[in-house]
Image 1 (cartoon, one colour):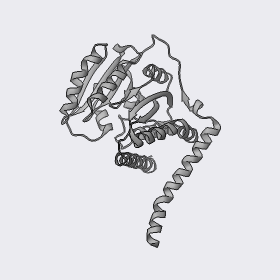
Image 2 (tube, one colour):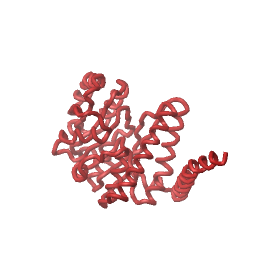
Image 3 (cartoon, one colour):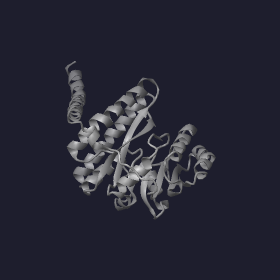
Image 4 (spheres, helix red, strand yellow):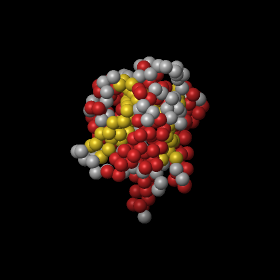
Amino acid sequence: MGDIMELLWLLLTPLFTLSFIYGGISIFSIISKLRNRVWINPEVKVGTSQNVVILLPLYKERFEDVRNTFLSIISQDYPKDKITLVTILEKDDSQTLKYVDSLKHMVVAVGIKLVKVINESGRRGKAYALNKALNVIPKNSSIVIVYDSGDIVKDRYYIAKVTKLINEGYDVVGAKVYRVGGGVIGKLSYLDTLLWYNVALPGLTKLIGYPLVSGEGLAVSTKFLREIGGFPEKLTEDSYMTMLVALKNRKAALIDSIIYEGAPSTLRSLIKQRLRWYKGYLECLWDLISVY
């Protein structure tokens, strides 16, 4: 019995410690009213635009998710002839390829250029897939934005705003990514992300000096992306990107725009997602200590 209690204590102590730290940062954020200081909402002028590339990695997706993301991109108030949409597919995923082909007319009809990249070397994760598309990015494109299938961007000026910020000297721009879904797990995921982006993250950003960005809706200057050799092929490439921004003394920003993404549907998938995040964070920490 004593051994069991000791094991439980060893397992629960880190959880309690993290909860205490999370709570302390959140209280600090609320008291200091950091939300309005960390999240920025730049004004944009109609008529100023640059060439933008949107990378959309896909793997065994639902038709509705691909369609919703295409519609979200089309709804952006940005010159469509300045947008190149690059879909990245896997060689063993013929069904998603059919979905893209059947929906192609939607984006082409409004003037968006659609490029398909097929990864023939086997699936190795999101960052690897993204890097497969780097060679097709036009040389005159100064900004790369990453979407995930099912992402719905609520701010119709999102592309215009991140373009403005990167033109002003920021190399990385992140957004609020709310994970939504039905059932108890979906509601808990939404509440969790709501508190994270509006309470905890502003406090953490103030403390460490750099914002932690999410991989969905992530905007990166093409120059910086090529400088670091592409997307870091890590479990949490977005967190690793933040680390590289800090190490190279570059600028990152958080834009007050909301992106809706599907939440895990089961407790099992939620736990699996969180474990992957935690493992990725530890990987970032280990590289920070051992490599840099």
